[in-house]
Amino acid sequence: MPNTFRVVSHDVMPASAGTPEDLYTTPGSTTTVILGLILANVHTSQVTASVKLVSDTSGGGRTATNTTTFLLKDAPIPVGGSLEILSGNKVVLETGDQLEIDCSVADKVSITLSIMEIT
Image (cartoon, rainbow, N blue to C red):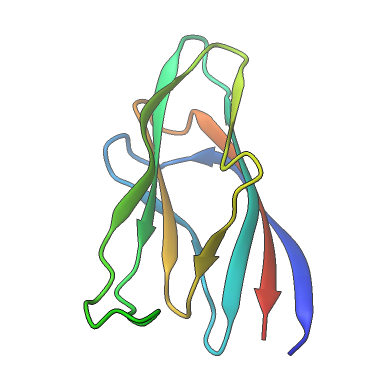
């Protein structure tokens, strides 16, 4: 199982405020480990941002199916500021799992995601 380190970046997201935009979807036959996620405010005033994990996989000793959860919900990011979420913690994504980004203002949060894909 090779491990491949990757960066996924998006200059501004989402296209429409209040409509989460897909940042990353785990490819087939792949497990992804999120190593870091940074959100930067590129607007002229404070914004709030949310990060969702969309998952319908199951396992890990559970019979229940995973659901959509927030990794970050309506967190304020000051003008010119950034927010690193997970701070040393890791999140595992299974095939088909998605990360979605939302912001209180369209196209005003810039995203950098560091991952390791295991295939």
